[in-house]
Amino acid sequence: MRTQFYKMHGLGNDFVIFDERPALLPLTPTRIAALAHRKRGIGCDQLVTLGKPEAEGADVLVRFFNPDGSEAGACGNASRCVAALVAGQGGGAHPVLQTRAGLLPAHMQADGLVTVDMGPPRTDWQDVPLASAMDTLCLPLPGQPAALSMGNPHATFFVQDFSLLAQGYALEHDPLFPQRANIGLAIMENRSRMRLKVHERGAGLTEACGSGACAAVVNAVRRGLAERVCEVVLDGGVLRIEWSAQNDHVLMTGPVATTFEGTVDLAAFAS
Ligand SMILES: N[C@H](CCC[C@H](N)C(=O)O)C(=O)O
Image 1 (cartoon, helix red, strand yellow):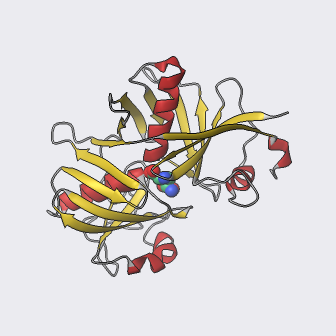
Image 2 (cartoon, helix red, strand yellow):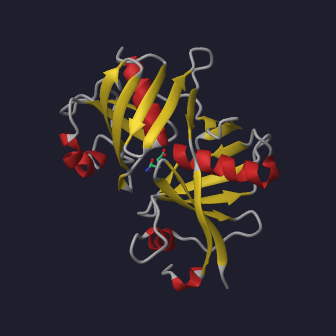
């Protein structure tokens, strides 16, 4: 029996999306890792499932899984893709995604870009989470990163070059981060534009990281390095991030693309 999937990406951060609203699928961490494998599977940065919403006001339940099988509470680029997919299925131009990070309202822009309200950043050490009480604005690590959660853990290093990427895996697994962390390296071009590369938790270096872009802008503002509206230039393209002074929410705007649709025999993949 074959199961339909959608292959989409946001600035090259790519996803395999399964719709479990008709029926739950036999997706285990092992099978997710096998499906996400670049050589032996379909291949993706994250595997995403759609489910029947439980929360009042939500249009769809969304879960995100890394290629190592671990589940993430947030995925900005995939949230944009799912919003566009649901809108395209007749869900209207303002779908609301129910995620582990909360309810995320989305908006299909007239120019084809998609905006997702990623909610507020969580900057207490317990929310990131970190291993002990400390100032999340300046962690006791070489490079003194700032840390926060967008529903998933992020550490942002403000650097002059990207050589620290070689430490990405070690930093992701530093004992300071009991749930590991996404490691962002940000080069400030000016107060309204930065370059960003992210070694993602459970995925490694990706072409773009939406929640990482949100975290980097918030951390830059916290450090006095950026304005609340900032362009984030990633390897795969540009995101516009706004950290609202009105409601403390972070708005992320960027493109989405559907690469192809397909079917797969899930039973052919180890479970
Ligand atoms: N690897 C991340 C999830 C995907 C985040 C990224 N793809 C995004 O667009 O936010 C984590 O484990 O928290």
